[in-house]
Amino acid sequence: MPELRKRIGFVDASLARRFYPEQRVIDVVLSGVTGAIWDGVKPTCGVIARARSLLDVFGVGSLANRTFCTCSEGERARVMLARALLPAPQLLALDEPAAGLDLGARASLLFSVEELAQSSTELTSLTVTHHLEELPSVTSHLLLLREGEVVAAGRIDETATDESMSLCFGTPLRVDQSGGRVIVRAARVRSAGSIQGR
Image 1 (cartoon, rainbow, N blue to C red):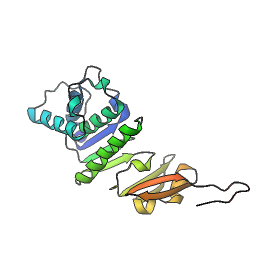
Image 2 (image 1 turned 60 degrees about the vertical axis):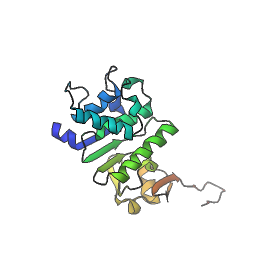
Image 3 (image 1 turned 45 degrees about the vertical axis):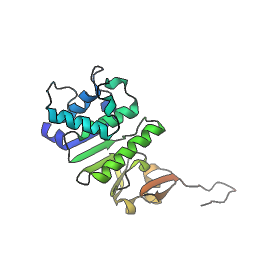
Image 4 (image 1 turned 180 degrees about the vertical axis):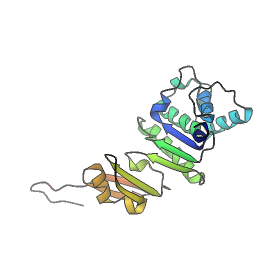
């Protein structure tokens, strides 16, 4: 398991709530070396430098010595992203990465994820989300699940359709693409005495 943890970076909002109140931001990022919340292992100077560099990449370098529990949800999300990337994983798994963030924090986090996806072509990423507009524009494949059953799977341009989305979410939906992103909105439903519009 320790070796597997190094190969998979994981970001989940609930994980961020498991750290101890006295842990600093830099401590949280450094815990990414082993994937444990607290292991007491003294990191090397090189690992500390990489941790600080990742914090800078995600715009939270100035928070390194602040206690993690005093950070905003948006700041915590970016710290957790730095933590996940510290051991240079082969796979980055993001579970609802923007959950609970306000509009500004969400936009900032998604920008960071987008930049990461475009610059780290050797890194495979997996995003679990109910909001398809949060997927990076370089996303290649989509797996749609409803109640644990596969609704559709395949290349995103073939899978993100009105029919598959409507079936997946159980309501009439319309799919558009803008700037490489998938946008899903409610389809107009015909009601008695009205004409359906497009």
